[in-house]
Length: 450
Image 1 (cartoon, rainbow, N blue to C red):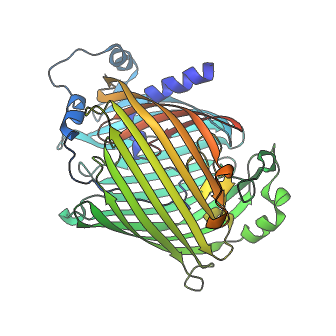
Image 2 (image 1 turned 180 degrees about the vertical axis):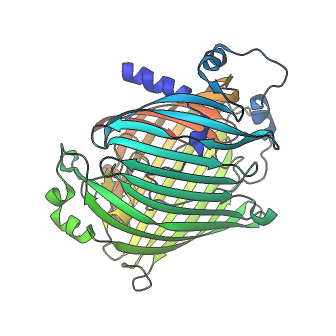
């Protein structure tokens, strides 16, 4: 219970910059979508107006008064110190501290950049030092840099440029560079019947880049093209209390321990009438996509991954306080017997929150999620106007070898409760408390799951 309370408090006091950080565990095996804002919803103004900053001189609430005592004010902007406390099925507890410096842009009268270094400790990764830098050239463009070094295994260099109005047009551009050695990685074997006891640890090394451009076709319909090149290999994992990949799955390790190249191109067509690309309150998204990798053309394997995805948001009261969110995804991969790390996967960040990342791997996967997003209050926190939201949820999904072997009796279920702070226009700090057949999982993360 004490862990639950601590995690919830840290979540509620989480600053908005976390919504701008791309997860180091982002997985190219799942369908990548560049959401594009469709036409303004009829209720959008009534939803967002109560959340705009109040300039009427409203008195600070108790949280504002508390934080005013611990924030260090400088000429360039405030600095405040956040404790780090999280836990995962894969790596266990993580403790540390993060000073956050929000630097003002006096010309624009807004935050121009954020610097957020951190130091934390984990039983397996030991000491980790991280430097994060976020730049906001204007109200919509984002530039991110991140570097990370752990005593054991983990390394990272990440750069991102995002512009939703490239060259003053409706084209949306996203470019990223990744160099990562990820210590949070486990493998259980392929298929829906793998056992929890078969878990093996490994580290995944990933280096490469990706570029996406989304183009409007006609009302609410868009065409998206994504280019990705990544090089992968597996290494010895940091968790010493369970077997290594080379011990439990020697053939898999032998086939993945050397660098392998993947040049992938994806074409997607989607319809998007949602009212916001990050914090939707209503509307529908439906998309189809195909990823292609061709052996001999830089890639070491030939395969295709097809996907159909749908999301819908029911705004029951037209004020954004009671939203039923529904999501479904079907993926099917065809081609050579590719390494497991580029196959469809079902785990805590890919559809089933009650298990760890990488828990189920197969030639395809099906996921269905539903949650009720209930806004219990709208309040100012740390000078930002936000919503406190609770969301009971149900996850179900499975993996399969071929589409013909997709069976209802292989579905895995998880349920639980998410506690979120939603800070407009695009910040979601979340803690998910999930329960399933294999136990419980607590996930601290940024953004909605769908």
